[in-house]
Image (cartoon, rainbow, N blue to C red; front, side, top):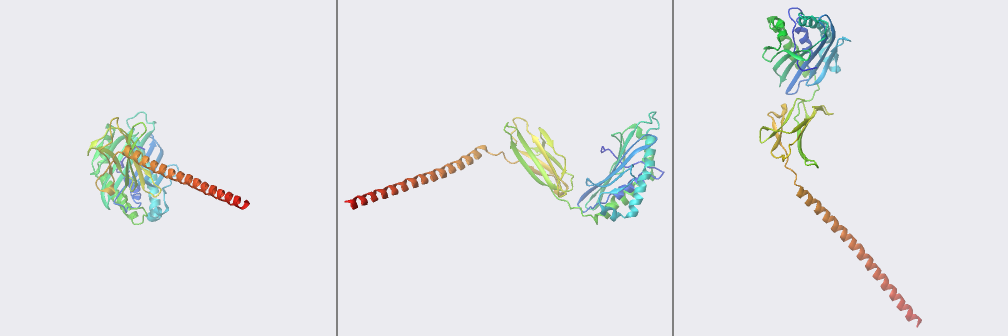
Length: 361
């Protein structure tokens, strides 16, 4: 699924958007005890101008899936039992029926797309994404994005303004910009996307926000290649941005690689970026900049100074010298002991011989 999606089109009929956002709302839930949370519902529809072949819906809060639905089994599934319990059986049944009803609205959209297309039997992939966000329990914006066959089609920004990308969107403008559709969109964003999210907050066991623990390392390979590594771990939620800078703001050049944001066993997240410096670059005056909601402003973590090889060799030679000195002392002591012991034995033997001679005479 691309991320070019958007909530959408329903018009005077049952408002494609009403049911659409009904789901959205249903999924806005999942605990929101943290300072910032994002709720996103994604629809993927495959069909022609005459029929819907496949319809799936996934619902996320902070990148954690909480709902799933597909046309094949027509069953709305909550990822955890407590979600269904909090929202109630009546809500789940109503939402599932709305999802079934969505097929008519999506089919209307596909037909409208193909109304001037002679190849109406070709499959079309429609993607719709609906997003709303909370910042410390305040509504800070929502968006709707629509994509067709992987390409941006149109989107609604946070202030309620539509942007139409291609000419095919012209026939949808009257519907998407109508007062009826705007009212429907506002209602469902408020009641479901935000409303249910706040309701679930009271029952969620989701962890609170946690700032990242950052480690910056300098490493020089045996081939003389300098690598700088910046790791952030233990943070929540997963949204984070890491980048390198040099001299307080210059975007650095080099071969950079980055891991995706990965989950830790405790429900927090991890990410790392590595940069291979250009030949001749000593790696001085570099910083890793980390931007996460719990850090407030982006925080700068400097690269540690290059380790001094001479100091390392000095320490190594010192240790080796001490070891040699100790071994020498031990060997000397053993040798002395043997010599001393042998002398005493020899002296005793001589005394015994003298005594025996005296007795014989």
